[in-house]
Length: 148
Image (cartoon, rainbow, N blue to C red; front, top):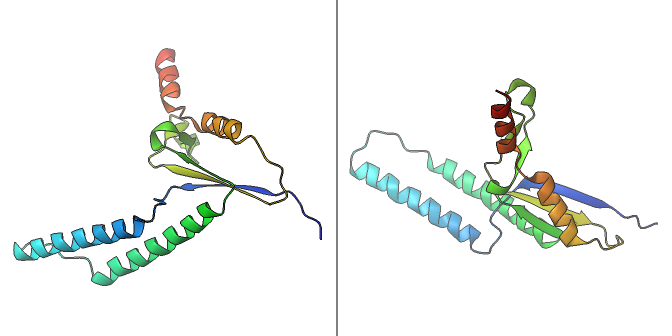
């Protein structure tokens, strides 16, 4: 067997990575339950969501968060791009008057590398990555205004 240098770069929406995140999810669930009780007490006519929907949502969230935490723990590098600091090109840009969009969510860039890979300059990589992901939406809007 021959060791090969392999690098994967995964770009996904960010999750909360700290150990309190499952507790926070439980707190949010408890808060929703309190609101439902208040509605019932006030004789609100809105129907409540079935409780099994909340249980399923919590189970999926917990599983996804566990997988995300495991991925981040074992990666070479994890860079979080704040929603205010990056943008993207939407797949349907040919149908829109503008090509670039501002991100609505924080994004995680996770670098996975084989152990045989030589080290890279992570500071330079991160700077280049942030520049590449920088939102160009406002620049595009200004250029459109200047042309009109």
